[in-house]
Image 1 (cartoon, rainbow, N blue to C red):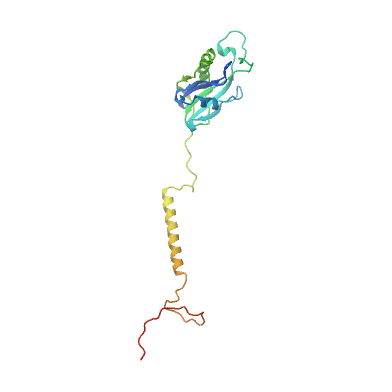
Image 2 (cartoon, one colour):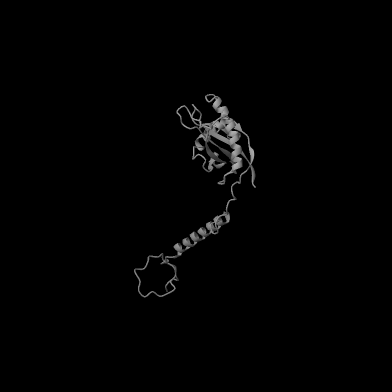
Length: 214
């Protein structure tokens, strides 16, 4: 079991109002509009959809629910809720947690988030035009977090020591190249150490000082 905390969240449409944030975590007080974009409708009754928020600082897992009269506590036969144009009303509800993970929370935790989201939705329907998103508080959940980061593959580490060693190798290569360049071509004015049988026109060298002729 992995104990952590998460915030219930919900986005839904009303009879007259389009999709709006109904319930939002207090840590996203300035990002209610982001929830409307991220919590887009999916298959009703499908598995939880995973999304990230805040540049990867948060993960949200949510499901799409078709609202009915039973969700409002109305008695009698259960009927789907519809807007003024007879379209079915949907609510996307789920949980938001800090960090990044691809593992969804337990179904029991999602059921708890649905109860909180439906309570907020009833307030939403009671006054859609003036409604402002309600703030949710963190609740304890069993939701595994992200796995530990994997170390780099062998042979691909290149820390500070590798950078320094590489720089020294480059420096040694440049120094060697410089000396080869400076000593690669013979100096025609240097003292000869071998007899040259045939050679091109001798290079013009400065006169040498020798003993006077007698």
